Image 1 (tube, rainbow, N blue to C red):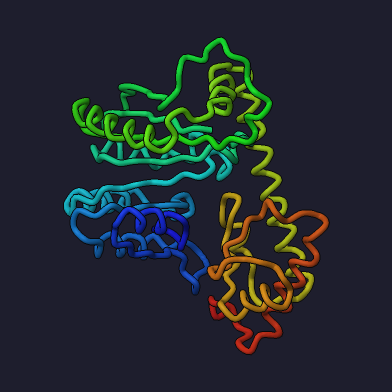
Image 2 (image 1 turned 90 degrees about the vertical axis):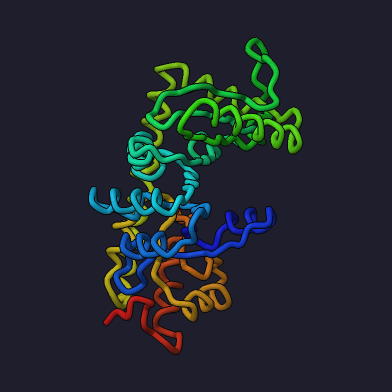
Length: 315
């Protein structure tokens, strides 16, 4: 798993033994493909390997082939999580392009996606089923009646919407998975709200709306990158030790600041800037009203902690 996130709690609750790993190289201030490959190599035979934030871990073609060969040999089942497709690079196809390596390689896998952020709404889950090779074999809206002619409720913004993509080697396996997922979905929701799902369907089935949605994602990503550039520049003007290029080198709404634990604790306890221990923050929360306070807090955290070095051992 990429971070100490909710994935571990979910699997622990289901009785799995969970081992968490981070692929962030604190010295190089980047996602490290070699660390990722080593973890896969050491993973138990037949395990479920949950992978989040895959986009910043840039693998070469050779590394992709090595990764898939290792997973096949050890019968590792990949479970990808994509929290906000399109908000990583601004291109919805590019954000999921890595999945094609696994489809073309004949690997079975799950891929969960949340559509709450990239569509701005919160409903039910959609199950998509594929054979390895990329052919869509079916789609199921679990627990949903035919609501084609119903009006969309204004309360749709209160619903969370997500989907689970299932890639299997043949239709028989897909049907087995579908039967189990339907039982689980019925036990959890029975008849979940569907307004959010219908809004998304309306957008994706209308070429004009779909293009407008894709364009809005590009604009949001550009705004996020602009915020990162501003943060980096303000840290430079404050004379904050070290290079901060790693902020703009990372894609997506979240990125690692590269602070060590004492510096994070200073941010939380002294400045009341609440960030996780790994210093990975959401840049969409930074705006014109708080950017000065946040950058000044980062600068203070580095200068005033006993260990004034960043986790990268900057000079």
